[in-house]
Length: 416
Image 1 (cartoon, rainbow, N blue to C red):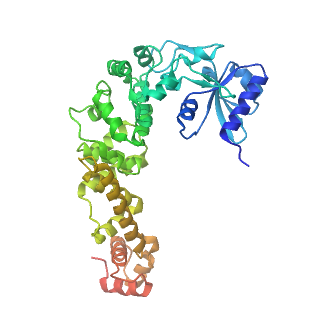
Image 2: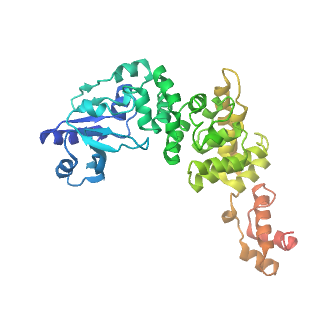
Image 3: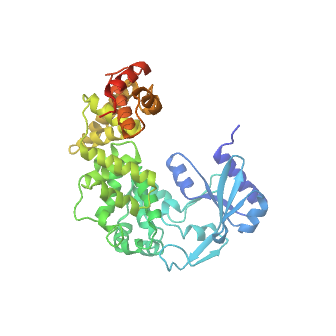
């Protein structure tokens, strides 16, 4: 039977304590446990030095040993175990110039970004909370540990992380932290776009991405960054509709549409964020389809042709976009938009399910069959005729029967 994640984590703490060291659960696990949120992973901090951790856990891996981190396997689970440390100097506004191992958990917590992430919990459930993280959880606020100007100047990515946590948790950003965030926006420039994209993706996947991007825009966080042409324009539309689509790529496509971007602009932005080719293609395709127009629920023929050309996943995503673009204004717009999207997705699924064929592989004839039946050498006509047959079968104008399709092919000859 698969061991529970928390039970496996406690076994790691027990082994460290039995060897004479102090160890705690730290970071997001403590925050989410106190909030009653789902737990997906657990980080551990300990007074044991990395070489000691590796000796105590022979199957461990030195995944970040320079900074004191060792990945420990316990049963079916893996845990990042990091030695208590302090960090000194951030000359690149992203990484510490020096890491010094220390013996007290309070010193380790003092280097962390926000109070809600600067708590520790031992295996008996005792909380270490030197900076008021639990109080901030109760007050639903994001507040920096110590001086917010110092925290943000140490690591520019924390600027975006502050917004991300506020949106994920539905918290407010504490006033001094918000003021420092705006004052330190230039520290974002050295941060790799891949790291920024990861945070923006988490904002986009949150329950209320529109609020997250509104905060980013209100703070003009990207005004001094290379992403300014995309994320620092003079005015922003209502972004509440970003919560309507289900998929992350669909939400990115909707953001592009709300900002009035063309496919080329959406592609340039996706490239700037270092998105994969697969993600880039999905976003730009959806932007292009939506700009061409959204078929209505009753326009089954248009939906069938779109599904043949782009597949069910893109069809459902376009349904989301169609509904979301109409969900603007009024207190019930979001609820109405989600309901409209659900109806249109169900309609698209029904159209897809009723189609006799969905692609050329399902067609009862292939190119070799056509060449033989028509008696002409292969050429572009074969592809044209196959696609015509596919469309006619999908619309129910021809049966997906080999003899009937070949008879039609002989009549058409070269597909022109």
